[in-house]
Length: 255
Image (tube, rainbow, N blue to C red; front, side):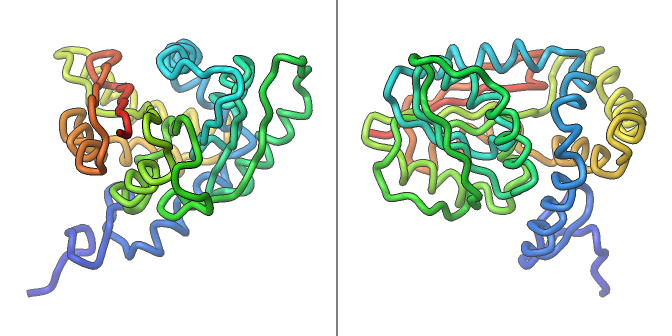
């Protein structure tokens, strides 16, 4: 019996609604973010009607970055989360697998007016599944709207646990599936019909935003992803949902 190209197998992973080889997913995700890098932050405003700014402020309040802390902000290319944490005096390593996203973040960092109270910022190209940092190196690990694009999420979670010091904290914010009846149907129509058109109009790329919609639907639901975080070794895990689960802030501690 011939297997459909969209059916999962032991040797494939999901790229949106397609099943592809793991290395093919990594390459194609890279192409998506290279394509949208320069318009990424503008599209975030358009897609969320500006709400992502409040979500990110809320996220950083949960992290509670402290002056002098070392924090690894994974998939943080354009710096939105890193700048907020550096403003609180933390020393931030911004890591991303995509150099084009990092270049945008570094350019934005140059435009910032630093003060003596601002923490440091370092930008580095890294794969979340295998980062070039020693174990027990960071006080906190953050990843915002990035882990759903990682090919092997369990490996990324294991690396997050490894590089954190004992007592270190893990925070992740990611899109998921809303459970609000009525809103869910509106959200689905918005995602299917409007987001690709917005991507074409603003970033000149409908396909990348079609993939982003598909990647959200393929991402584990909130309870399942919390279980994955626990399986990586984190304790005292929590999940805080926004818009009925359309967005969730996950947290855990390394002991």
